[in-house]
Image (cartoon, rainbow over all chains, first blue to last red; front, side):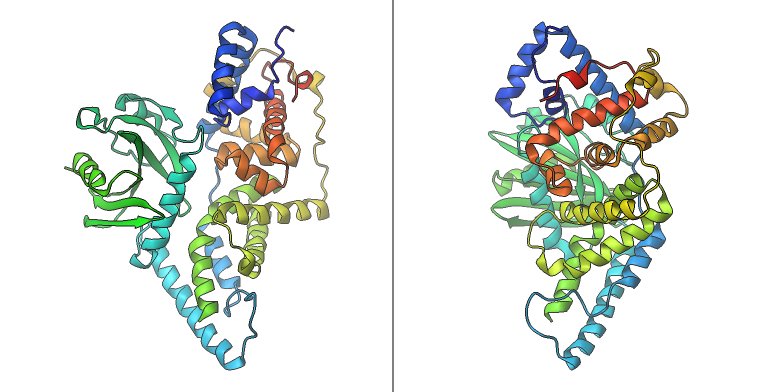
Length: 251
Length: 177
């Protein structure tokens, strides 16, 4: 065996976990190492088999009910402060109300609920931040909408609208899967000058809504619903850029 | 209203990860019925300890609890688990590629069975990475293995999975980090 490279490095590469320098080194190595090329191909083939097999098993619906029913109604044990009986009774009532509210919210298809707007925005910004770590931005790297769109087939149970807006100053960079509020969503990545915009998309049964915008941790976000899809775009670029991108996506 | 706020925060941050919790438990204990009980127990535990959660990654936090609950359960209900050392002689059989296997109609069953033959410690990194899409950092946090060894753990796990699938593989074991 001629190859002296640690085998595990292939996995770091396949998983997009090598930093840019090591990834570039590895790619140079690939040019002269047929062994590693073969290993890489076999790893990629294993991964696509796993993904096609759709092994993910969701929780049965009754489990959610069971879990909700089993939670003590008085709330989690606080880190400090002793609870007084009267307070506990009120809390029990409040907790039951919250559970009812929560169940009600779960029954509404999609991820909506005005109370959850801020938490959702925080999750979206977190997902965007996570994606900016090396190797996480895109799972499918392509500026071609005809490559990115089919990539989502079989990975999500809906077909997200994918378009390249390079001529309008938002070149498509690729796409990835992300998880928002426990649901797998499609994420498209656009470049805007030196910034990136993540656009998260998932289906909703709700009616089209007007646009909402906000700022979270210094990141601008915009959200809207159009034709059964919910859109959430986030960026560190300026807020007007988001409005512009929204007009391109949902004219 | 501190407690009610906490409950709301729990419902908002933790409960959305119920699918992730169940999926991990299902693959670790290898059946849905036990996985349901374990998920419920883990959620209850998460609820109790929720006051101590101040991080930003609720999914990793929950999955860590689920994972630990599963391993405790596995120890208590110790069925004959496959050992970490896989008999490579027996399983390297022919030259069917995973690609060809994928075409087979029972691809899912086949992969599921192969995955289930792995030792739990290998199974969990595969599930976390390939099904749950966790980063190495998250995998390290969930499984308490040092982040520096996540890559080689995945390397070994995938190697065993390929062997279990009867696929030809390189000389992985001789070339670890």
